[in-house]
Length: 146
Image (cartoon, rainbow, N blue to C red; front, side, top):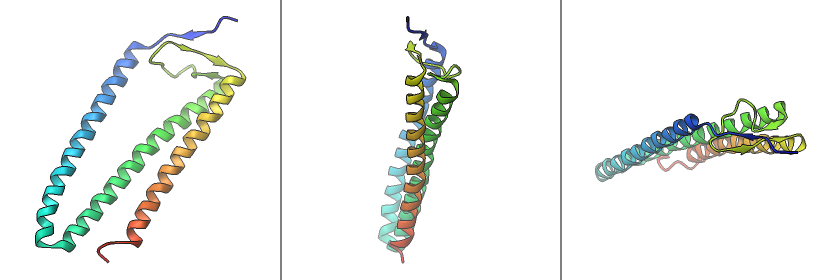
């Protein structure tokens, strides 16, 4: 049997590359903002250490929630891909664009891949949510400001 090859979607590849560059720019600007905030936090720490600790905890909460949302988004996408693969019986699913020429899998191989993606997506999603809540709970329990 001759394998079916789905050709790459070049427009989707360009959109994906642009999205990655935008996300990278947002991440770098967020890092720059954090460094600027830490400089201000150092100045506040000299004047009022308790206020500096409160602001540091607030920054930790914000970073935890952003990390949780980021990982949750990836988990949801992988979960979606696994569900579509299981429903369609082929991998990659018919409506999913590909960024390079990809051999389409059918039957048991596609079902196995779909189940793997489904479990992986659920694991990432659960880990992100539980990890985020555990970190936030840990911060509440072991607060430095009392």
